[in-house]
Length: 281
Image 1 (cartoon, helix red, strand yellow):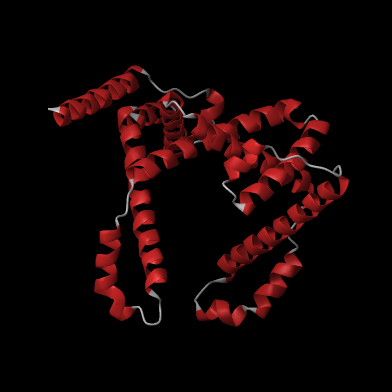
Image 2 (cartoon, one colour; image 1 turned 90 degrees about the vertical axis):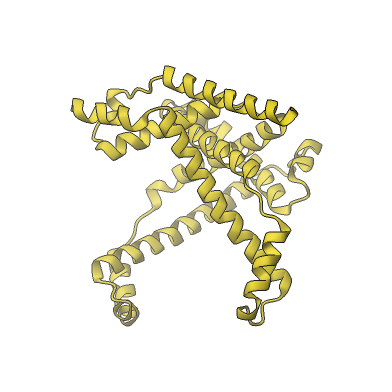
């Protein structure tokens, strides 16, 4: 009887969520619609729908802390990006030289010049951004005070993960610089940070749902390992188990995430609303 009751409540909950979605029609402002085709409109509407669902979810204290950590990291990345944006430039002479030096490799893969050029530009840009970010962080460290305090709460949150602790410490340096420059008080930055917060909210909510719903059992991993171990060569059992676990989890996570998004899209009638906007153009 208990099982039947739980199942009934879940179905009832799903129906209530669907009815709430149907009663809440998504809308776009003229500014949001400007220059968008049907697919672009659908993307914006989908994000709005997921955000609505996410905002209705009640974070636990631990989840709130994790969300704030993720948002703060993205906020810091945005600040550093703003510091270096005027310094970024890709020299066409460098692009041409790299293409010439690697032409044989591109030709062997049947990659035309236009595509090769984009690949080289992207690689050079990524390298330049990484270098400039490191330079800015080094400057901030040089300007910092002698001491940085890490609270007991922050140590507990890190779960003794050195990378998390490092991120928290560097984040304190960046936060101080942002405060000194009143970065978050500037109107355009406020708007941009609100968009970033919404995106983090959407992705964190989806990731939470995936974590709750996607499982990989030891039995599944062992079964696949036994079937495939003859093909694995010198891979150790522990390494193989880890690879199989990661592969199963990642594939299921992608499927679960897509299913969740598709359900929200259906509940909020995103396709119908996007069509209405497209026809109104």
